[in-house]
Length: 225
Image 1: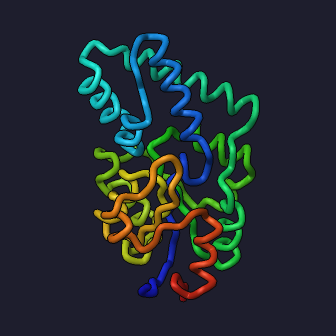
Image 2 (image 1 turned 180 degrees about the vertical axis):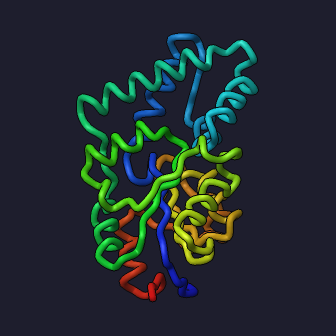
């Protein structure tokens, strides 16, 4: 494994920092079932990380132009917020430890997410990690969603770092492809979807958890100045 100089780390949010993709999947499934639509994992894995406009277009392509997307999306959103409001957002193993590790070493952490500012900041504040995040960029700030690298490139620009010196941590197929497309050091931490052979061959690494990312820093495979 070649060593990589890392000056900043860019995190995806849902499925990577928080165990929220399952909540979203359950919300979509329930909203679809009550209206006669089968919104399953095979479909959802193709839209994760994409922009809201692209997701709506994907629904219309699969289910027809008359699919009640806005109505189902509102129900999915309501169900997800209700769960988080009652039980809190589940935090992924190793997240806080990795953020603390980076913070102590002066390595800035950014978040690049297709989710809304309201959802993101609410999660940061409720879990106590807001102080570790230098900046966040959102899907609405770029014209193309993942697998286009635009959102990661914007984060790198705001951090003042080159893509080749930024580590991108992602769980989705689209997000990891975006990291590759943008020339970033990409690591997949799988959530609901396993890596493809292509991703295994083209990413820097595939790690079972965020804790394993800390180990890569400690081993020197990822190093800082």
